[in-house]
Amino acid sequence: MRGKNNWTCFLLILAGIVLGGLIGNVFPNSWLNYGQTFGLSSPLVLDLGILSITFAMTIKITIASIIGIAVGIFIYKVI
Image (tube, rainbow, N blue to C red; front, side, top):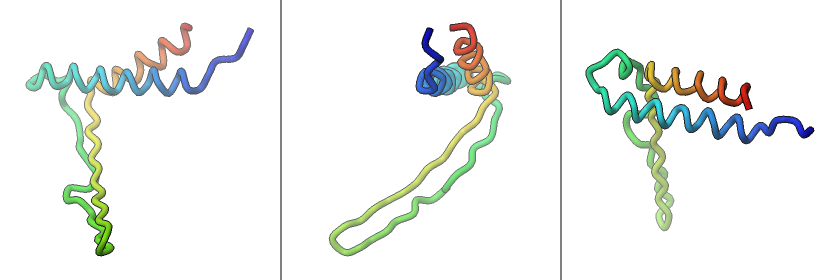
């Protein structure tokens, strides 16, 4: 029997984050959407004359996404 694949765990956790974020957006005034947003609030721009690169990233962690991560890990352990 093969060992469990780490990519499977990563994809299940990522799916849990996405589904948790979706559930949080469906119920915007519930406790599921309570969380914290952090990251770069204004984009970082690198202008090299002929090439301009803009970098910005924000992460919003909510209760629903944490529950989604836990469900993803649970599913990984079961399969």
